[in-house]
Length: 228
Image 1: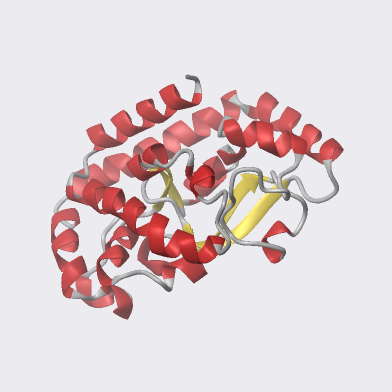
Image 2: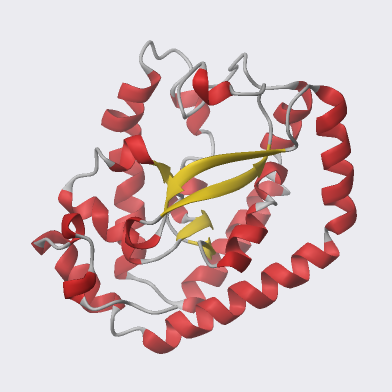
């Protein structure tokens, strides 16, 4: 993992608000290399270890409702690159075409199996393959849909200096995010105006304090929450 030269950043990232974060992250070369090595080794180990579970979940999803096993959606990662994030499908087929890109508690689009695996974060396991491909990391800002990134304030673009992550402090703090939008009449609008800015405060704080040790702590905290 490397930080590109400032002049090679996308134009929407080259602003004064991002500069301070860039200067800090660009000095973390060794930590970034170690982060990538850890991601690859741990992801490979988990894919092998969890392969029986991945197989069983795939069968249950196929039995539960018509549609593909995996849900792929375009999201944004490091330097504004668009990629297709992988998750186990937890909603009816083509759910993103009949509603918002974020879900609220009690969303009717969620399938029976989907509700169970979402609660335990099992639906995120296919992102291990995203990590192997380098489009994601274990820890980092959760990848947002393109429509939400287009609403970023100048400082929020700093979160694109590193790859998107499976978990983060914001993910932990907002683990019940769906409940915040339960009674919303405009889910997309409320997410952009009320939820996203608060999540970004944590994401930007993570950048200021980035270290491999902090990543490991956030991963451990995530595991404890999942099995609590």
